[in-house]
Length: 178
Image (cartoon, rainbow, N blue to C red; front, side, top):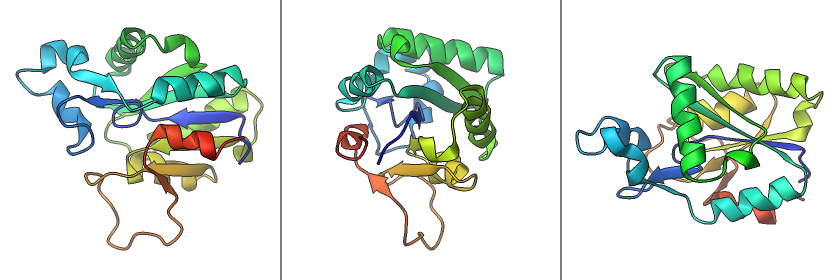
């Protein structure tokens, strides 16, 4: 698979809570009384994600992180910037964007905007995320290839599509993307 741009979800894909990894929906960490005021200290990058991002960045592939967030765009972008800086990966991304936390289609319009901005085609793009509706389906519904990060906490349709494409970790992309 050859791609020029890869879109990534944030929570559960690039980073997740140290305590629960992908065994609980990751946003609990922002609401828990013990972790909400210092949530960065309770997050960690997912396995081999930094090395994987560096490989793709060095190949000249655009990397974009898009995260759904219930906060205002201003607050959500500030939090995103803090996470990227905390993990020292901000320079690997072309841009980071946020979508409304209550809009499963929010990432779709952002993907299309960035493709237009870079004069790229839909077939040049890939979306990777741990949410079936907010990541995988948001991309597939607009004709973008997508990979679902396998987990047991994402809300899934009653009948899982036979053609669902999934990976266990972001690092699996190294075997898939040229």
